[in-house]
Structures are given as C-alpha cells and as structure tokens.
Image 1 (tube, rainbow, N blue to C red):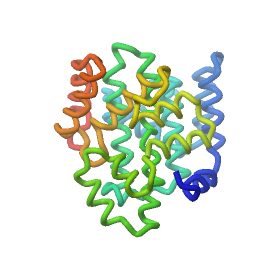
Image 2: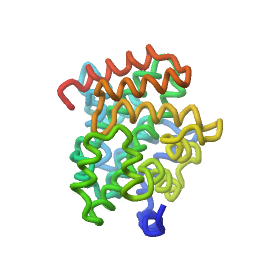
Image 3: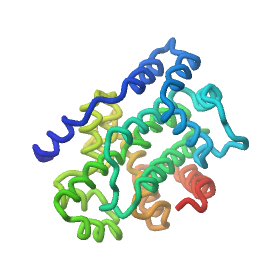
Length: 273
C-alpha cells in the first residue's frame, strides 16, 4: 500500500459519536434494547436508514415496521450495530462508484444482498455465525470507495471500468491499478477506526484466506464466497455462483444450504438487480 493511500486513510475522520455509543451498548453484556433505541432515536438519518432497511427485501417482513423501538427489538443488537456502522461509513466517505460501473445506490444494494445471503445461509443452521458475519459482510467492500476515488484522481476511469466490467478476479484488477485490493484497504480503514481485530483480519484475508491464521481463516472464506457470488460487476450471475460453489467444494463446506440461500436472495431481491 502506498504512503499516499495510507496518509489518506489516516486522514479519514473518526466514527460518529452515535455509532460509538451504539457499539458500546451492543458490546456490553448488560446493554438493553431500551438503551439502544434511545440512542438510535437521536439520529434521524440513522432512524430513516434502519426503517428503510428493515422494510426492504433483506428482511422480507409481512407488514411494515414504523417505530424505532419495534425495529430495534426485531433486528436485535448485532444487526443494529452493523447497520449503524454501514451508515456511519457512508456518511464519512464520499461515494462515487463510477470506476466500478455502478451507482452509490447499487453499491449499497449489493452490500445488502451480501448481508441477506449470510442471513439466509446461516440464520437457521448457525445463528452465532450469522451474527458474527453480518457486520463484516455489509462493510467488506468499503475499500472500493477509496480505490474508486484513486482511479478518478489518476484519470483512469475508462480503462479501469472496462477491465472491471468483465473481470472474474476483481482484486487482481484493483492491485494492477493501485497496488492494493479493496479488502486490504477496508482492513486498514477499520484498523484506523479501532474496529475489533477479528473483523479487521477476516476482511484483510478474504481474498487470500490461505494466508490467514487459523482463527480467521473460516470466516475469511465465508466473506470470499459472499463477495464472489454477489460481485459488484455480476451479482448472482451463474458464472459467479459456480466459482463460489467451487470454493465451498474445495474447502469441504456443505453446499446445499448455500445454494438454498442464493435462491432466497434471488427471490427477495427480484427486480432489484
């Protein structure tokens, strides 16, 4: 990673106080839904974002949720913390995804689709894994915002976008142009913000999970699978599902629950992509 990129990451402002308070409550074994709701209610933009997300295809609810307390109670601390983190990142970083050939709205949609995949995949078979993965999977593509900005600064939008459009290995294209992958940039940003070491490392090694220490490797694989299946340039295309499935087979991970989750996401986000 170049010194210029490192300096730019170090210059990113700290996370908002609202997120810090939410994270503290969610990390406290004695924290309560009531306390969490009160903090969330102080941030109108976060409230709007939570209500928008909870009523989106990501959760497939039968009736519209209109109150903060109801949304917080329904989603739980882990997911509110994840949504708050994602909203904070979007607020702090200028989002211009033109080099990747997508709009900021589509970028957010793809993150939500990856989150939905994890929820559907692990929600019934391992709730703990679903909770652990939800925040990093929502945030793992954050580094693309910085890389996109770098591509714009270098006046390489056309060339980069042309490569990305048909790329199977997006990290390889990123490294070719800026010398680093978005996973590595994301990890460096979250290290700067003081995120948990576990989240930093599973994102950092998600492109090269074979290099990860044993405690991070399994979850780095899951992140790799999610962003392969729902890639920014080809979300849920058969080619990408096949590549993701091959990773599962190679790592002896049960395939059927993953494929079921893929179909659930397709159904939930039908017409959205």
